[in-house]
Length: 479
Image 1 (cartoon, helix red, strand yellow):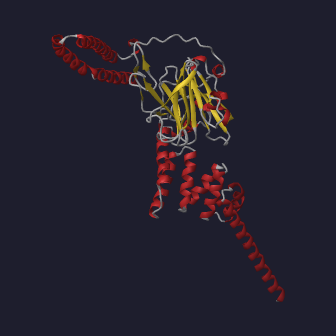
Image 2: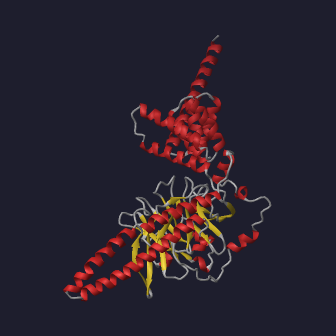
């Protein structure tokens, strides 16, 4: 009997000891978890969740550890279990995971539920409302993903990404800010110089430590006349990495503002030399943009090739430079296959974008060749901007007969305006030199000419708008 009692006491001691070790191990794992040491905490939580698979907290903690260490498959499995058990933080982390794998519709559902739970507890939801807006915008981008052929990719050091770019001479040149200006400071930007070598675009921090876009012109042998691009281009956040097409007016750049969905996003704007203004920047779609940093989009029109940088799915010190074939029509992937669109938007494999039987060996070789300039001067009778990618310089460029007729009216009106301005200058000159009688004779003529000129001024713009709309409609119907 005594032996039985001793054995019972021994077993109770073993159980209490094991429970003590279990509790101690769980506390240690939770401490590592709170400190963000997910790889170290992961084995312990894996053991706990296997011992108690229905435990909501274990599923959350192990799912988060899997997510933070890149084990997305297991992360999704265990976080979904935690969500079924209504664990509040599981909605947030599962939303982040869904966004990472481009299931933005599911991510939106998770964020909506998380926000609803915070709202019930009267907690601040502003930051999570912004995340919801980002995933909703990303979902719209996926549905309109562009059918771009990405023919090569190269992983390089983050600080040396320009080594992957080889522009033809006509495309201009790129350099780091520190190299171009021989600067000792740490300015993480690039300088683009046009083919003529008389204009540069670049970025550097302003007084509030925010990167803004600037331009300078060469004055004799020195750079000067620095101008900051206007506020409709420069945002309230960082703007950086500009590149200008050979037309001198189309500017690609990266911005953390202007409605970016995460980090740097790629944008395009155009400079209107007639009004000396910039068009409202247009955000590029997917696959160019993502929740990661996407920047330094360059298009070499001589090679008909483009590059852009992204740090999606890359270690902190690396980026991937993608080589692609530009598509001026910006055609989209048609159909309802959302998985195909998600795959293409995420660039999970560049081969997914290749045409059947396509061989891009020569194009990849061309991308690394230095090509000297052989550009002929483009005839420019006028500058008629259609959109961010199309500009016409002669009447023969205009495709729509209706648009051509409208723009001929623009030319005729501008001619009338110029002739009337010349006539007015002569009349005013004669007025200033004339005697009193002559001035009285000229006064009514000058007033009449001024009224006529005033009525003419607004007409070219109205006819140009009609011509632009007619041309855009024509291009859409004749894709």
